[in-house]
Length: 488
Ligand code: W6P
Image 1: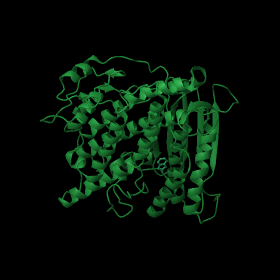
Image 2: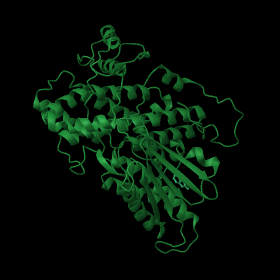
Image 3: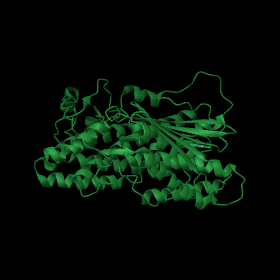
Image 4: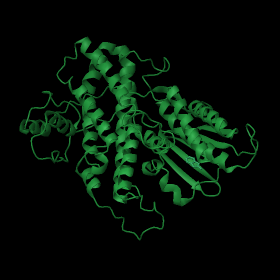
């Protein structure tokens, strides 16, 4: 049973890699917040060595909640000074509408002009986002930071940070500069392709190291730190890839999915069509694994414009990713529960019910399966990276950095899907009736200007989160996972 489940994941991953869902996007328009961050500028002057570039802090907001960034004694490297400098700024969240408007402005303002302003935005915004999350890696438990795979990931981030800040003083009016920048962004995105798998490997390495020390279970403070970190880290990664892909699709030679698309954004994303596409893909995997599959029963209610397909401005690849993951889970539950003999489109398998409802404010997608549900004691595991990383599907021992095991069996699908939903201020929730079935709800914002990026910001209270010895103040649960309450 578990094997089949794993296989479905492995196949799913391959299908995904082959498909186009991981094209994501950006663009900018009202990013002209040229607020000079005075605090960072002063900090600059007082830093022990000059930063790598004499960049003018030009964008985003300086942090009110100043963070003591240099914990270490001794002189900082120029690189560390630059990282600290950029980490003093908050990332600037973009709304889907801003991405879209920027992409549309190409036809009125000219592509070259837009490429320049995108360049000017990204050469600061990307280092700000990179630096913020790099500072957070440094707050991870030392024993995780010191694992080979974690080191590799850190190295990639340093390299990419350096690649981008090289452009701090470059002339935006030089066509060649902007063209090279666009190429470099594509390279950076490729460098980071395996970040999720490699971080997962880092956790496996930590687990093994602890085991070798005779500590078979990770303490709950460490688990919580890692869970908290990975959510923030992967969210930042999603956002950085969005910025990069939006730029490379608008100004490089990568083609959008259709003429209608603005980078990865579909201004008329047909929700039902994306859901049906995800179902069809998941069904193919299901059929391969179980030789049967549940039917889809779908209902779409558009309260805004009755009788018209529910459309919205969204990144279809994100919605595909989320719903594909949910379908796999639902199908697995239905097929593994049923003792029906094999036979395609088994009439006795209960269908998966999907209802899509669009209102002026929300797009809600409810997916119900009758696969027997999840016991309450297992609910906290659903979005837990640590739990998902427990088995080592490909045998564990892997040369760091190369041939990192695939996602197969890690089951990062649900926590990552929730991040995609939350990225533009939506959400993903799972409710279950054990013995009966499960409802998964996807919430999205109808209005593209309400759908702004949800980005982790690094500050003092975040540092406290990592350092706190967390106790929840309730009598201990009988469940091993009872303490895995989310915080942050
Ligand atoms: C299950 C477990 C699950 C997780 C996510 C979505 C749907 C389902 N169904 O049984």
